[in-house]
Length: 86
Image 1 (cartoon, rainbow, N blue to C red):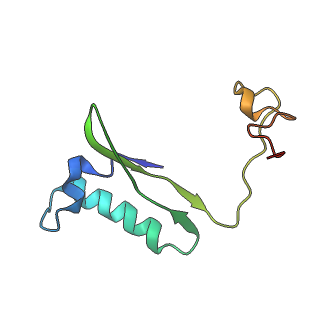
Image 2 (cartoon, rainbow, N blue to C red):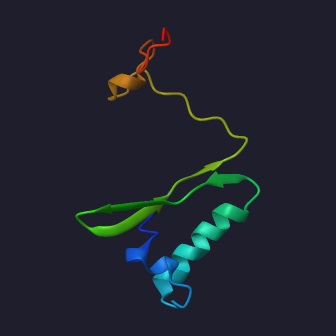
């Protein structure tokens, strides 16, 4: 997970050479070009202005099991967040 990747929209400015913009671009390019990663960049607009983050997942790896004592009720064993009955 990479945070603050939009850099107030400056990441879209092709002429920008600011170190933070170049770092954001490098992270996004790495995610996009790495054969074992799948990911995207998401742009958000809110009280902080333009922001964004880039989640990525390593392909071919299982997600860890949810611990039985999870503090999140939607992730407890035996509970479904959505009904499959339609």
